Length: 258
Image (cartoon, rainbow, N blue to C red; front, side):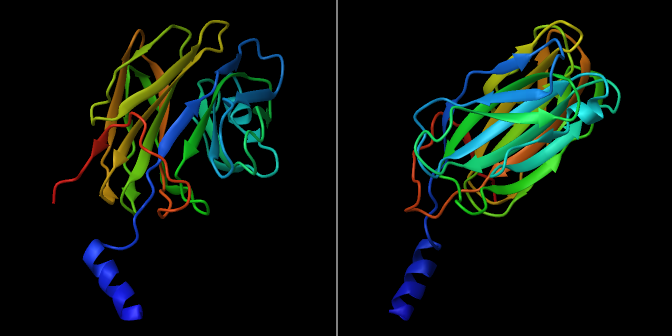
């Protein structure tokens, strides 16, 4: 039996990986008047047990180093907390939670360390590794007064990682994000919070990397204004087939040349 298993692994390249899908994107939530510290993230009903609930917050406010710092409830794992400037600007804060039951929650509230304007989106992922859903991640550097961001490269450790590039722009004006990005990543969604001196724009791009390795950087651009911005690149790791299998939903995919 062991010899047969070894033969099959060699012949077929190891265990199959489940496909990762983005099941839903929740209704964006925002607060522009900086009257409180709670940042609410909404999720769309219909997710299943073991789906990954992924919360994204873009904060915009003075004393941003405090406003970007959020405390998530128990059971949530924060993966990034970055800001484009310690005084003014905006930032990115994200965390994930594996659903314990079907439609476990409708929203989650993260508490900021200071009053802040914020914009948030909740994304539901299916087909991810149930133990280690995040394969790789890299924080970008601040790019001042620009209409683009060179998002950082990551090195995926396994085939079929869904690589996501988030860009947050400190802006009070409506921006139009390019689609796709310069490297082929698809614009999944972009949301904006305008006005009040606490505006921010937020774009999510993703691309299925079918082969493990270095992704390279990717330039994400927009029209409407040039402002301070920051980015974050990370990858959702697929599960071994048989646990949360789902089809890819409208993702672009790329296979690296050998």
